[in-house]
Length: 166
Image (cartoon, rainbow, N blue to C red; front, top):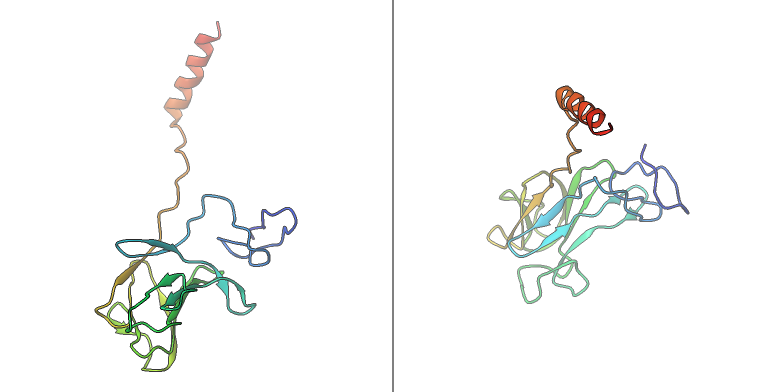
């Protein structure tokens, strides 16, 4: 199980992105899912609903929202939130908005009722109606490890090192 890199914490995180005990991000090489539209990219944070630790990406008209739709009367003040579970599942909760949250063209919950759905890579999400700004869930490719040299390259490197060491 991954362990927190914070020397004051060092707890098993159970989480590929961040320690839910202290909030310390884990080392590079781990990719964080994003919500993006044509103008911005918003990291989707980790939240553990059972322990209530971590953070959610918040959406709405209120000034304290991470994605703010100021002046858009189709979006509620506290419209929705998005997070990644410690196990890596991407989740979206509509907070009971009047005009709804839409994922891949389908409304998340009935009018005035909260509802939660799982998101997937490339899910299309819109807030306040299906014709609103469309965001995409993006999971960047993990950085690849450098390729190991082939056996022939390895032998050639050792031979070259032997010749230059004369």
